Image 1: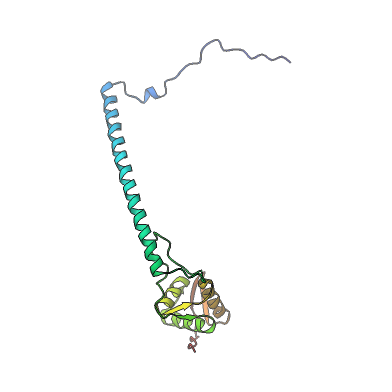
Image 2 (image 1 turned 90 degrees about the horizontal axis):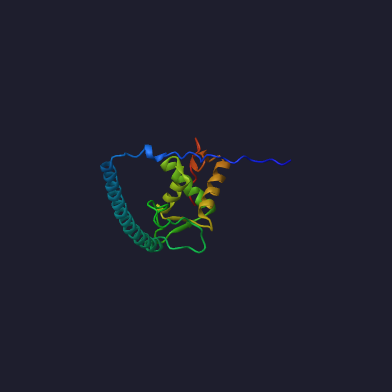
Length: 179
């Protein structure tokens, strides 16, 4: 089967698509070109301002990193929360001098006491309150240790978990006093 494709005899029609959008008046075109040049100049100035602001931001982030390391020194034995550089909200207050480290029953008792005093709390809020009261959560992963401690209290019926990461003292239950 020898199929031949016929060749076009006429050139394709060229349609000026953009011509309809342009004004044929040369003064309008010159005005538009002037506006374009002005806007390009403004854009170049804005880019310079952005570059300056980016350098300022880098400097500030470096200063924040230095302060972060001074306020929240890295604990090589713990994977606790430290603020990320440039973050505007601190995840936890820094641990005070002479921190009392809690785990197990004392951690559960103090946590229940804070839930009883303060009402329902999220896990990060409870962790922050522990720090503000001079307590640290001992363990390689403090957040997990605290969540496990409260999970144990939920299992024992002394606390309730109304939502993910939220805890409150169980109805009709008193917090045990820390020993």
